[in-house]
Length: 67
Image: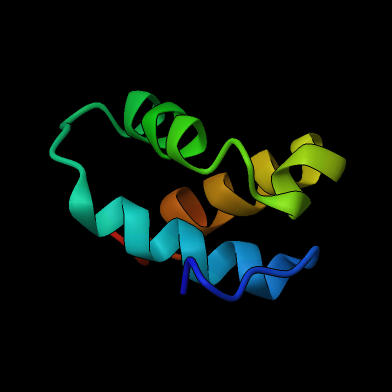
């Protein structure tokens, strides 16, 4: 997915999920931070950091999607 990234939430969510799976960390908030470091050049994270964080936290804590 890294070769096709767009400035929208869907693109960010797909990139986030891919990176999430590649990181070993038991602290979920720290793991989110580590994913954000890897995705620091993603257009959605750059233009919408607050919404990117909310989306990541929703996926992890509300949907329990990527545990």
